[in-house]
Length: 429
Length: 94
Image (cartoon, rainbow over all chains, first blue to last red; front, side, top):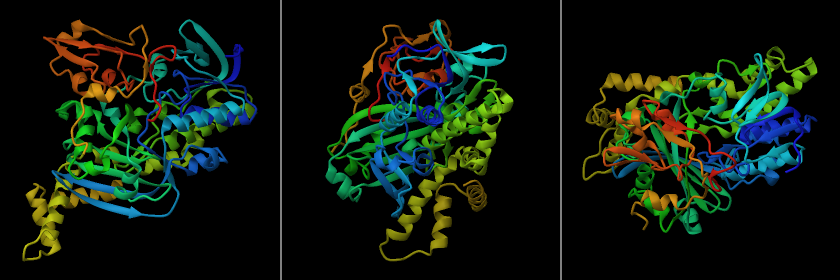
């Protein structure tokens, strides 16, 4: 490690997707940037579900597809509703290269290397413990007894906002703010990817599962195919999990792998890694009072930027793009003469104009929807019983409309509830 | 077929840590005594919290650093922070 100067233009807390993207952008514009990472190397503390949307990353890193660690392009999307030993699936086979699977540890290492090559000083093994302040102005960071100064700090510390909490900028996390994700990455036989998942070279699948995989708790399962492995896990809204999880959380993943209709995908598989992470869920209550302060910007999970639509999650691209916009805002503030909150107000403005806030506003009711238990209990069960009534016949075929009402009734859903939930889904998703 | 569920110890054996000699988790056992629900036991994905006789015991070594315990503890009895100096879990494939 080279001797660290005691003053930088910018200090970035955390070398994750948000931090690395911001540091990279600022270094390419000539800023002297220090990025501090609490892990032994960038990426070593990062966890995600399994898929990243490429467009925002391509905008940040022009040569992204040439060198980034892309495992498989998601050409196949599947959504399954599960009940007991049966499931109903929607399967989409496309051709576009809009999202890809990877290991976030690898992707972040790649992003941080891009930043380093552009001139960012990265120091690993440093846990930032607080903000250095002069009055209300942030003038640097503290790590234990040591401190480093900068004109501006980008807080990209992730969902566990220990630095922002200690500075009094945000309150401690509440269970209703977040979801818990638990994941196994398992090595599978290449034949399983080709034959069971039906994937060609470089083709990937993103699969979301709803229903009794979570014992009816709001949340769901996910499966992503990587180059020669599969990521499988579960997400549960933490407030519901506290009251409703009747078993240790890791067992839900194990049970999913062993499910009679899923175990063929995990034949002879071997666990490579087990991980867990908190996921921003109620993004509006997680949002810090401000995103730009005197000498401070907040990006990525720390700002609560994540979209969960049940069938898909977007966190990494939101994080990276928010970091990129933080970099642009700092560039503009520099031209205006300094890192005051007023000059840095370009950051929330850029966010508002971007897909990040447009998406979060468009889907601002999904958190409410996710708390509708019927979506995770009655409806998956209903889908299964509906299909069974239509397809599992001996002699008499059933009219579809009648079978819908009959399956609804069987699962305790009256016609009016069915209609009002239907309207809610259409309204929020 | 891999239908059999694996034990958490065996699952965690696939992970790598550089264990910090200083625990990054501390638990106020006096507060814990008054907790009837103890959600940490079921919700810690690494099984760091268990009951021994009638007391809650914890181990910080196998922590995967998600931060769930800190959020779910109803009595704020768990103090959880990041391990220092690059210690703790080292993810490679997550």
